[in-house]
Amino acid sequence: MIGIDIGGANTKIVDGDEVIIRYCPLWKEAPITEILSGFDGEAAVVMSGELADCFYSKAEGIRFIVNAVLEVLPEAQFYGTDGRFHTDPVPELAAANWLASADLLREQYPDSVLIDFGSTTTDIIPLSPFSELLGETDLSRLRKNYLIYSGMLRTPVASLLRSVAIDGVETPLSTEYFASAGDAHLVLGHITPEEYTTPTPDGKEAARDLSLARLARSVCADLDEIGEAGAVAIAEAFWGTQRSLIKGSLQRIGERPLLAGGIGSRLIRSTFGGSDLFDEIGHFADALPAYAVREVAERNGI
Image (cartoon, rainbow, N blue to C red; front, side, top):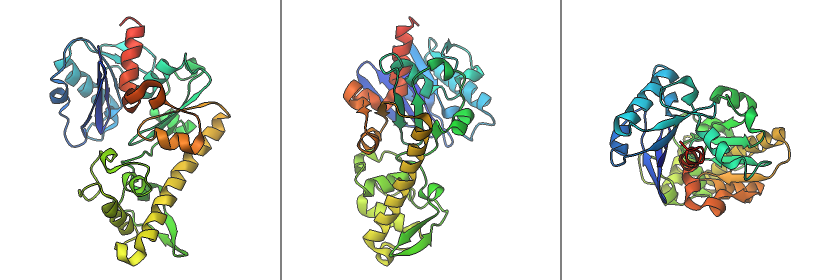
């Protein structure tokens, strides 16, 4: 059995011991069947790509994704926010990827909070009681601060940061998409250029000097106008805002052991403490929902 997580930007597949991540922006094009064409047999699937704005509604997105998967993998089953597997495009399939992760980890780490710091979002999930997680939607999780729509790579810097002090002068940011979270985290050394796996805002390569230039442009400047220190100040202020959002959510939940996953797991552990899922399950932590849905399906005899 393979595990599949179809997001709006990436499709992640766990096949045996292999983790496969394909950039697949549903709002531009949707070659899901092409990506899955090399696989056969049983599959367990979760999704969050139904929210892509190429779809008129989440229901339309669910139908599209389910049909695209079934075209290649007719035995596939889809995990829903009710904690069950389905073969039809039911509403419960919307954004159930985080719940699959919780379902897998809840018995081994019953008192913990999972922080899945991914490329696009941060899921903050108290793993118990599991029954209270059933039926939660992206909307309800946003309202509870269990879903922070900010991640390690794709978040526009100006979406979180309104102004920054550069050379002691408070400087507003342009709201253009000049720099991304990937630029900030690359400049700060939180990721390598190889880990900057999404397209950059200007389409140029992921390199520190170019990330510095993109950050400078977010305050309508060239790098020689504000210097490297100015660009680094923007990156530090952006990460500071992200860090405060995560800290605030954890404070609302209360003191619990922390479990970090996703591309930003190392940063979460070094900042907030706790355990890193990469130490627990290895490279599967980079595609946690895809791995989790497969393991939950096998555990349940699907």
